[in-house]
Amino acid sequence: MAENVTELHRLWSRILDDVKDQINDARIYDAFIGDSFLQSYEKNVLSVGLNSMLAVSLLSSKYAEIFNTAAQNATGNANAKVVFGDKEAMKVKEEEKETKEFKPEYYSSSIINPNETFDNFVVGPYNKAAQQAALLIASNPGKLYNPLFIYSNSGLGKTHLLFAIANYIKETSPNRKVLYVTSDDFVSEFIMVVRGEDSGEKLKQYIASHDILLVDDIQIVAGKEQTEKFFFQVFTKMYNAGKQIVITSDKHPQQLKGFEERLVSRFQSGLTMEINNPDVATCVNILKSKINSSPINLESFDQEVLEFIAEKFSKNIRSIDEALHKLVFYTTSVNPTSHITMNVAFEALQPLIDIKESKTKINEQKIINTVADYYSLTPSQITGRSRMGNLVLPRHICMYLIKEMLDVPYTKIGMTFSGKDHSTVMSGCKKVEKELKTNVLIQTAVNDIKKLLKS
Image 1 (cartoon, rainbow, N blue to C red):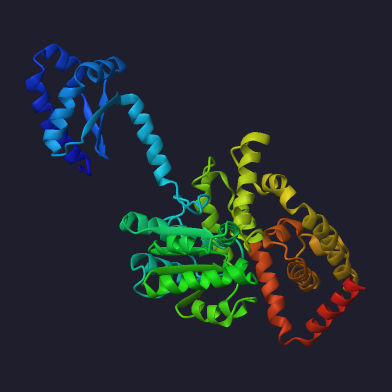
Image 2 (image 1 turned 180 degrees about the horizontal axis):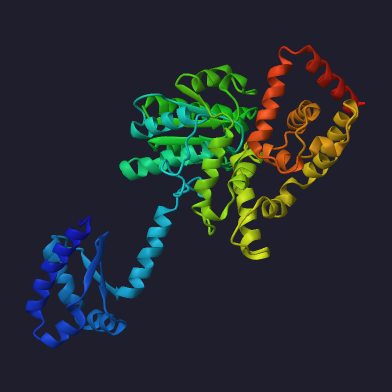
């Protein structure tokens, strides 16, 4: 039987050569048969597309025997039969068939984001090693480190790296089959299969039929005994077949609770990489990258706004996304502006930091008041612009305590202290940190002030 488009075309050409010799009316042939095509040849049936239902009716009723004989001669199959259909209707049917065929048997909700690649993964000191390991694995799946285990706190780019691996392999090795699943989906699919009185063997075979398995947030499987056992079987089957496995988690394998030792041992048998919390400079670069993909121009932002957002939300890249989305919405829809200053940023982002900021304002003032009282000064002297010698140390201690105790960004501390530059605030805090290592008087002062704040 014909199995591809070229073979179908050649077969139909041979049949038409035979048919044309038997149909003497050139007008009939040109109008109804000339642009016909053989769509498929399956189970003795040749499905042929015609340009109209009138053509289908005419050829089916008047010329069916001629076509069947020609088809039997061309195929050598005495049972071959030609069936006509409207080509547009057949096209829709074929598209529906293809859609149905391409729907995965399992994990139908599992989607690889095509927009998250190595090209737009912002690299910094905190994630460079993990990024390099992921790229190395994507370039040589199953040949180097297996499994690759990546761990970090939430929102630091683990999933982006999994998608990047998948997209890289799809681009460079399109014949390789990649399966990405979240652990939530892995657990849910296994439960549904078992509830359907299936041993899970078909699901195991389906997963193992892929060349690369990417599993996100494996810690979710912990404590689920049957699912864990099933995962161990899948892991072993794919590992022994030389297929690549990449796993992410929120903890190092040794810190994972609720897993059998044999599975933890498998996790550690390859390469384990950590993604640390990003530094502020990297967060600024991440923010710039995301702004370049937003409706707002990077030039519209004051540099201190970028530093404020990067510092405030540096513990979670998803928080940076959320902050930027809210800022974009605010400055394009709520209060349109072409220039984004600190005041605009505070107004836009207040809902995200409202609870913490409401406490921070009170505590900032309490720290300022306490330091002022301790040194027999007024709060306005502490936060003012005067550079008198007796104000420098209390001011620096005040800045240091606000940063240490409240984790307020340097930029915002600077605004509290008469608009001082964030680098000035940072320098003051560093000076206090340095003095605290050796200066007994400053150690005593800071400890006394902290006791007063907690009393």
